[in-house]
Picture 1 (tube, rainbow, N blue to C red):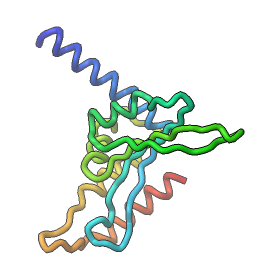
Picture 2 (picture 1 turned 180 degrees about the vertical axis):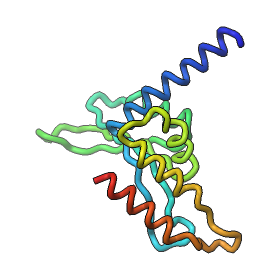
Picture 3 (picture 1 turned 120 degrees about the horizontal axis):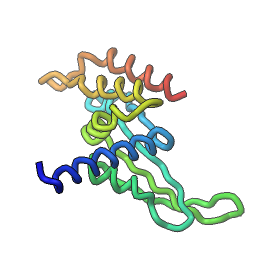
Picture 4 (picture 1 turned 90 degrees about the vertical axis):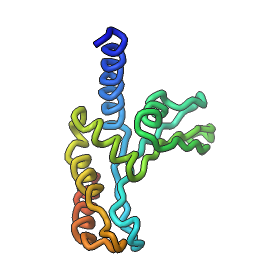
Length: 149
């Protein structure tokens, strides 16, 4: 293994550990349990960061680089009517699953939620498009919701 390859692998591990720490403090694992069969039990991973200087935190762009998803920017007024920018990293479905799987070894606080979300993402629709495992997904979603509160 070359030194360059070793450096790249070490950089990735360091990035993952740092991103996991940031996600532990600022991130959220949530689920969708609406009535549409195609989206019952879909998983979302998101991180919200507010800024006065107009720049998103570098971790938000690293999440997007490594796992996919997107970063959304919005404005809001805070205390004293000051203008703030809100940056939200959002990963749904496969990108969320990828993020949770890759960062799982580094999680502590969100480890149990991540495991449940990964399990939930592994439950697929049957070939007719019917979700015969909806009750199981709903139980997992409820457990994630309980852990979030």
